[in-house]
Length: 131
Length: 347
Ligand SMILES: [Zn+2]
Image (tube, rainbow over all chains, first blue to last red; front, top):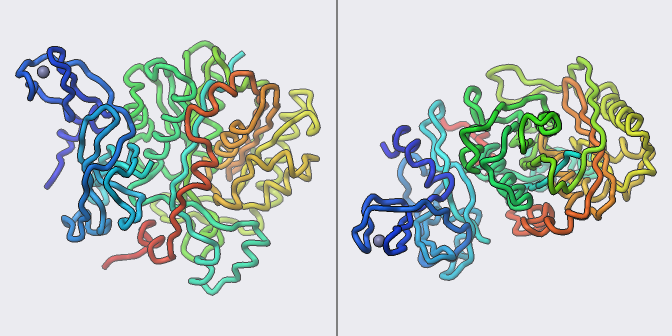
């Protein structure tokens, strides 16, 4: 279930380096990158790297997690607005769950996202932590 | 002259106190606190490992160096806890910092000395003109067997150093390496935890190599302890580096900025590199620094650095080492620590 190695590998630029697509026609930044601009429908993009700080817009605490994440529960997942206005979903870690609030300043950190069992591939990417 | 053009550290936020570990094993906490001079140690979160910490430390080093990562020509991560037994850590880190594909990569291993090895080789390749910038990283998330003396010190952290010839922050004035075959600490294939030779790890191992390497490095540089502003020695606990420093004729004041083990633990391959990063954080232009690593098996790498005017420009471009050490700490109880470190057997 979940992420296949091939898909994970294709998504390395966005997962590792926060690479987004900026529409060359209207300037809308899409993350993850898309083929067609949601705003103007054009199909040309430039790669931009997202800023590594932002704030929590909203969040939820996962107490009943999918099997592979039960060891981590309870954990928080949040919607973050980065400094340039781009929004993304991320797990929020290294935090006391009672201290999460709207507007909490956060920064991006490189973390292990999941593993394909004890003998499989390790998947890496971004999470956010209190800034 | 070539030297460090950017540096950065990373330490996880989780900590466990010596008392909390001693309580579980019925051990005497004061003997560890006084005898080995250990207060607490860092613990990686379940989603952290050598790769993730190396990425964070390197991002800090790149911020300070202000270079294009595409121009980094080699990456060497030294660790004894690479996440994979087969598959390099360096490929993931190089990809995450945007340094692929024109880059030479190798993971290094030599117990706690692997980090300084990556620095040594990177500096060599930069000096030889084979690469424009070289990246050496020391990182570990080492483990001690539950109840073993090593469990009180085995900690997690990373430091990364970019070497180059322009905009140098700390010139490398001398290097020297000292090595013999001394089996004081080892881990065989498929074993979870390392074994060690108890007291044998002290005099013939740590002290013999650290003191010989320090002496050899200073001799080659034509310097004596009084010529140095600061010194950093490998720190398997709080006591050893202090004793090594005093034996060599250094003062306590000279090692204080890089003497982190009492409140960090032993970060193995990260230990003397993180000590160097913390020392650079407080160094002034013209300061001279001696760094001597130690890795069981056994060997030491010695470096003499001279800090340049550039240090004042780059210091605050990334978090200071003490920010990671002293801010936003999360204290764990032994149960949570054991779960995080995979020490609990589930069926
Ligand atoms: Zn558009």
